[in-house]
Amino acid sequence: GAGVSQTPSNKVTEKGKYVELRCDPISGHTALYWYRQSLGQGPEFLIYFQGTGAADDSGLPNDRFFAVRPEGSVSTLKIQRTERGDSAVYLCASSLNGGALYEQYFGPGTRLTVT
Amino acid sequence: AQKVTQAQTEISVVEKEDVTLDCVYETRDTTYYLFWYKQPPSGELVFLIRRNSFDEQNEISGRYSWNFQKSTSSFNFTITASQVVDSAVYFCALSGKRGSNYKLTFGKGTLLTVNP
Image 1 (cartoon, rainbow over the protein chains, first blue to last red):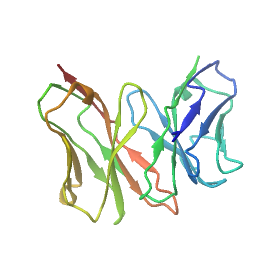
Image 2: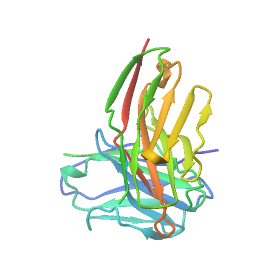
Image 3: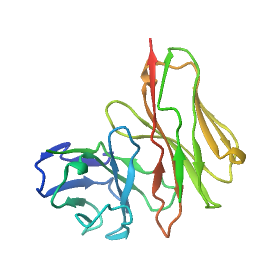
Image 4: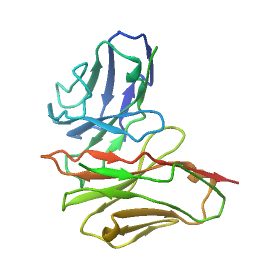
């Protein structure tokens, strides 16, 4: 079946602009995670959804970052007033449920470049 | 706080050599899970293994094997008879429960290059 998909694959934007990154999880997966991977680093947790609600947003770096999952499926990560330090690969993962027994399946990521 | 340390930034071997990737973790949780992921040049993270904190048995899957030692907080990964296709960045990760959230804490990764 289809895996996790993310669009766009690449996004170049100017400093100060607003961007939206989309994640389509595997059908039927209730848990969805966003991670950010900077060059040469491991992915860092941003936010976790169980269904429609953000169960843990403790990884969001500041209030310029926001994510939604209105129908419990597709999620959008929104970044306002982008800064050059936001440049990274943004990864989305989904799992059947939120427990650790359920493997997280990762998407290919969106590479965001802020110029 | 949880922490994963992969001290080896880069490893280069010649095909057919065995190679071990080290992973040391820190956690205060009594129940936790350890993972290894592979990230090939294409960029997509591929799940390799999950191990819970109560199961210290070593595991072997083909050319891959994992050595979990709670006493040293280590979860090392060995590739036997390495192949060029094994070239990738390998991440060790730790998951502990915070409410219903089993978010992963990753190490910085080890870049493995297998030369023909």
